[in-house]
Length: 252
Image: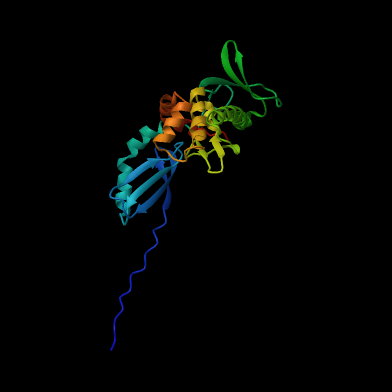
């Protein structure tokens, strides 16, 4: 007597994402195309900073349909990418935001010296020394230093208010988030936030400190965050409108 055992089909590994370069009116954009079992339509997203594109498509969608979708949305991409500029004019005569104020960049002409924010003829100026081709890097180093000073001070104040210990504070250049808080009490922040107005910097510090008590984004967390930063909603709105532009600046 023989019996036939039914075996379950082996689960297939998901197809690896396809990567390609998309030409958007002469602007070459890295594009990642990922198939998703539950996707019922094509979605196209611009990554934070406007430096890459991510596309999600239904599983098994024909390549010609993907290409047709991209062709139809060239105009949309052009409009959306227009607000992202990888050329921030980081040279003598250009401008850069610092604590929410646009500063004119002035190269000092000296190979040595500090980068500093000063007033010249009543106008805000960021004076930069060093080789002219290294102006962007020197500005980035200045912003990192100033961001650390601001965020350490603000986070310490907010942590004292809620009596929560901070283990460490670090500066990073993350594209997907402005800050994070670990369960061990380690805080990290994107130093690019120092280009935002002081109220927005304060909100970011309050947001991550609030996670020291509430490791979630539930009602209690937002209530605590609002207590630490009464201007929370305005700051969130500013980041939503302008945050991607800060991420898009290329300092190298």
